[in-house]
Image 1 (cartoon, rainbow, N blue to C red):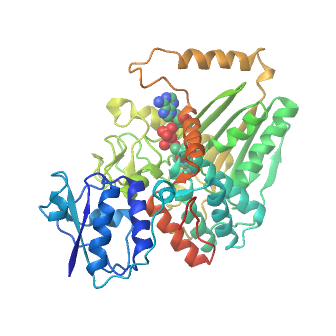
Image 2: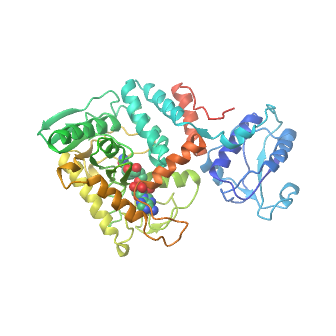
Image 3: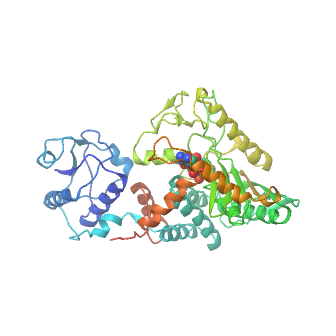
Amino acid sequence: MYSPIFLSSHIFDNDLCTFNRFLQKHFDFKFVVKKVKEINLKMSIFTKTKTSIIKEFKSNVKIVKIYGIKNLCSYKAISSNHPLGSKKASSSIILLFYGNGIQSRGRKMSTCENQKQELVSVNESRRFMIDCFKAFNVPQNHAEQQADLLVAADYRGHFSHGLNRLEFYLNDLSKKSTDGAAVPKILKESPATAWVDGCNGLGAVVGNFCMDLAIKKAQTVGVGWVCAKNSNHYGMAGWYPMRAMKEGFVGISMTNTSPLMAPTRAKEAALGTNPIAVGVPAGDDHFLLDMATTAVALGKIEIQRRKGENIPEGWAQNNEGTSTVDPEAACCLMPLGGAELNSGYKGYGLGSVVDILTGVMAGANFSTKIRKWNALGCNEKADLGQMFVAINPNCFAPNFETNMCDLNSRLRNCEPIDPKMPVLLAGDKEEDNMKAVDKAGGIKYLPDQLKTCKELAQRLNVRPLAFVCGK
Ligand SMILES: NC(=O)c1ccc[n+]([C@@H]2O[C@H](COP(=O)([O-])OP(=O)(O)OC[C@H]3O[C@@H](n4cnc5c(N)ncnc54)[C@H](O)[C@@H]3O)[C@@H](O)[C@H]2O)c1
């Protein structure tokens, strides 16, 4: 038996999350959705329609499971003349659910829930991640370091490198290809340099250790340059320069990563997304460039996949070496700049520089020697190379921070092409994102990410994520 549900034609991700939780709140789920015709994932549920939904469900629907956003995308719906649909715009769609009988839990949604139920506070997200790491016997201090890194990425708007990566790290721990308790050790040292063995520890643990060491050296001799081998994925590269900036130093960090970028003219991947981060203090202000040397970080393609949306031209190529907009067909990332005609070879050059200063210089894996990696984790050790530099700007010309402020304002005050789109500095978007999270009272995660967390909570027997205005 089918039961139609009316939705309007624009569902945003958060609305889908709201919808998911709405259904969970009101019904015992048994089953979901019959395919009829592809729907646009961007749909929205208006309050008005919820009454209709409840009415329909109460009469004849029982749902067992609401699938993640990706699967929902592949469901079909009709742009229909159904009585419920025809009351709305012509682009209205009807989703067909089927099942038998409804068991309403009879709870009402509060206004607060309407607005905030999909929000997770920064502290709660951190708590959840720490619990998950500890479920694999990661020591408290290491679990905290790794969670701080991940939640900072979400807070700053780099969702690809926050909660989105948790499952990857946990599965590596479960397969014992990462040692959650490992403590890095110094192999070779001079006043300004150190070569560190990460001992296959968690990326944040190795990264924090190395950047703190570089800072210590910069405090003594003006500059500290530390290379680590035998490390793991260290998340948002900007995290480490931020530590140096707190001390008034310029910070630089780079890491090599699993091969994903096809060198210009190549059909196959031979370099990673190899990010570069440079952080510079400027009084109350700063400059923080944190970028992959591919057109985008892989996580951005994962996020598009989770949303069921296309990727822009120039991000990735298919297995023929042709640029593709289909995230499922993407097999290699293109270097920063994209095709050769658009100077993609410069991104390729920058990615190579990262591999030289990290993998090659640290005696770690590089290029295609690095394992492939995905959410299921990997049995093989990563042995990534990373570099961390701290520089005391007071070793050079005076008034560094004052001049930095001057530079920042000269750049920001350039006349914009569109007055509604002011000129930004590297790091500004992230600052705006943190403000938006503070204002909203939490981080808005994609429904699919929340689903992954729910499954992790069950699998690891940890307390599930709570929402700011949860049910
Ligand atoms: N550990 C790893 O293996 C790995 C690999 C790749 C990327 N990453 C991380 O992924 C995250 C995302 O990387 P990305 O390359 O997709 O970042 P991005 O493209 O979103 O931003 C790159 C930089 O450009 C700046 N920026 C953005 N818009 C701007 C504008 N209009 N004007 C001026 N500056 C602007 C940002 O502030 C940022 O510093 C980063 O934190 C990166 O470190 C990690």
